[in-house]
Image 1 (cartoon, rainbow, N blue to C red):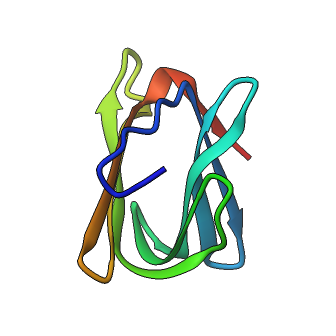
Image 2: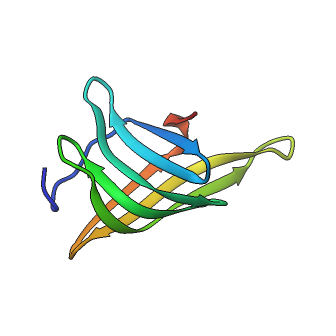
Length: 104
């Protein structure tokens, strides 16, 4: 539950709406473990809030970055999503591999 804990996740969902977005790191059968929300610009989410499982959203600062990889045929696919946010003096980080990302 706390600042030093590890949130085990096996899914990630991205929701976008009018320049705002949330990156939701989830565990099947449990739902959201940690959700980062803020303003999306290109491949970067400027984090404005964070919500840990079973807690109220909190004001936060930081960034999430979407990394891409080139695939056969000249296409690009999401490779990894990395988030680092601060609430006061507590840092929350998440890293997720694209094979489990759901884009809305």
